[in-house]
Image (cartoon, rainbow, N blue to C red; front, side, top):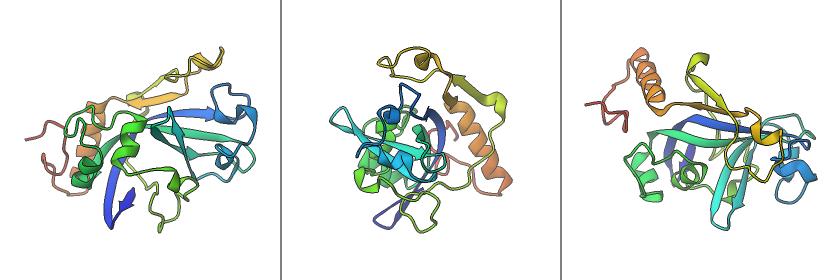
Length: 196
């Protein structure tokens, strides 16, 4: 959940990748703590947001105890609330399945930058936080090698540390959850699902 100018932006995460410690040769912490990755060495539950390729911000969640650098890259989200604001922040491909299916795309739509690096994602007052989501059956989760880490030697390129739920399956799960909660299910309440 993200709050921008008093507007709530909500989305469900459906693709992630893990980066685990100083031994992981694809992890930013492989060379130790630097100004860029220092937050990875801090307490779990904080945002690690870094700039890459001179143009994109990437959102990660720090996920180990203090001193053990590890984070999960958020690779894709399914938009739920605040769509008009998200579309204003990221108009490219808005209203299509490919709209928020990449880490740079979702940070644009959520209005994230380095100013949120280190944000406490567990604090209910934080402008960026992780909330309880929906239960995803394990058989719906695909586990694959990570993407875009050709710089890392083996076995790190082949580690199956990417988790993804296919977009149509995620849409179905969200629709079912809304029905269980007696919430409306329509094109307006669940965009990009093919609902009438």
